[in-house]
Image (cartoon, rainbow, N blue to C red; front, top):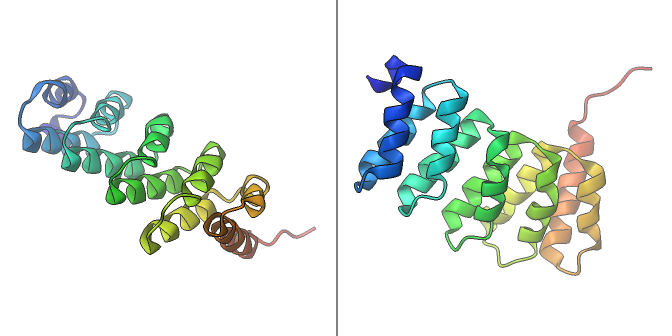
Length: 167
């Protein structure tokens, strides 16, 4: 119901994220803001990226991913270094969807750390989605095999998926 009110509900929902002591209320406020297509709603969701509750943060990461919110890039890069595997994977996926080349170096640095197979896949796919071969190629010089592998796989698929240009 609040999402249907649109912009008129944004202030109340953002306030719920900032002040509610109940994680479920904050999480539902994130999802309601996700359904509202405005800059103010995106800002309210970005505030939830730093929430104390894991489920609220996860909902916020998915929201910025759905909206491809490039203003969330600095927070998503920070989340790549969090302890939570599911937050790290979702942040990598969001960065890939957003597609900003500024995320390539942090994705490659993350690939140099301890990875499970799903996180490694998320990082590699994010590099493919960003499709910046010049910045991704820097990963080939890494001393860490996982980072080199992510860069190599991404580069091989970036070139395959590039549209054919006719001269």
